[in-house]
Amino acid sequence: MTWEIVIGLEVHTQLSTNTKIFSGASTAFGAEPNTQADAVSLALPGVLPVLNKGAVERAIKFGLATGSHIAPRSVFARKNYFYPDLPKGYQISQMDLPVVGKGALTIQVPSTGSGQAYEKVVRITRAHLEEDAGKSLHGDFHGMTGIDLNRAGTPLLEIVSEPDMSSAAEAIAYAKALHALVCWIGICDGNMQEGSFRCDVNVSVRKPGAPLGTRREIKNLNSFKFMQQAIDYEVQWQIDTLENGGKIQQATILFNPDTGETRAMRSKEDAHDYRYFPDPDLLPLEISPQWIEEVRATLPELPHTKQARYVNELGLSAYDASVLTSSREMADFFEAALNDVPGQAKICANWMIGEVSAQLNRDGLDMTQCPITAQQLGDLLKRIADGTISNSAAKTVFRTIWLWDKVRNNPPSNLVDFIIERDGLKQVSDAGAIEKIVDEIIAANADKVAEYRSGKDKLFGFFVGLAMKASKGQANPAQLNEVLKKKLAG
Image: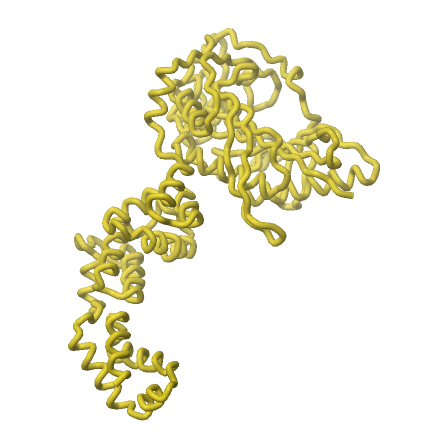
């Protein structure tokens, strides 16, 4: 029997403010438990929340980046439920009037073994501001649970999608695109290991054309790998349950990465179970058109705009443009390097996607940890472009620069030229020197020359190899080929 998969995501994005959403307590990660839980976080009697303007501006930024409606007036509400790490007994969130309304995000779904890559638009239902809860620590206390309230009150933007995704691949592509976007516009650090970007995945299945099935919500996935595994398992579990005559009960479930299975945590609450009502301590939030325009002015060039510019103005392929804009750090590095070699966008892109990315992957680094600077890459590409060094020698220079800080300090102002000079890597472009090498090779290989002239054209590579060896790999390939062809022709 054929089943359709229906997936929607609720993504909790911790906003990059220095202080909490309703108080001045620090949001820095890693402090000793409960050292950043102030009176507001602890919900001590008589405390009053004060809204963090920076959190609102980050929400507006996201709305603008996704073409979403920004509400001129929004309201904070109390979402009532009990949990040990929620001291107030309620969470301040938004219900009926979120700060960000309907929008959309275009995603690129990669090709699989059975299909081609394709583009898809995922609709965004809303994105609302709320405070994070604390953290319950179950593993460190035998027979007890530890409560750390440092995270309580950290500002969150919960981004809710429509159920527009129909496979794990689409859900992951959407989550990755969202992750890249919030990091790109600087509203979240995206650190999934620290819980800065967490996904709840709503999964249901149905027969083609049937109404939506009963959904189950997989909570707190902080890894794309786990998301893939959790969705795959949950989809198969729901299909097996229905085909065996069972019914799906709406529930909140957890994924266990050790077993690769999902398990029910509690029956899923509906909105009325939380008894939402407007928070009496917070005035309605009003966002003026002027404020929106002020925030718009702080937005960087967005990834899709930059991609289009790379294709239309720099002549790059759509693939190259998409890789170069996979992170803001990658795009900034590329553009800074290109400043040194204008008109060489393709070779610069090739080095970024090839040598730089490959070496980062081998060393387990990201662009922020790149040992080579954009200026140094630009200097290197300049020396390739002006014929000072060959591509082969450039790779040698690149590897030397990459390891420089591990073995030496205080690099010279132009490290590229220093290494080229020191290691004798300059390309031989002197016509007289190249002719001398070719003449010597032809004189020493008269029999091969005769064979070449009799029609064995493939021997040309043999002569090129001898010439490159004689020049210690430093002969200019284009000049060498030209001289060889002329001399061998007799």
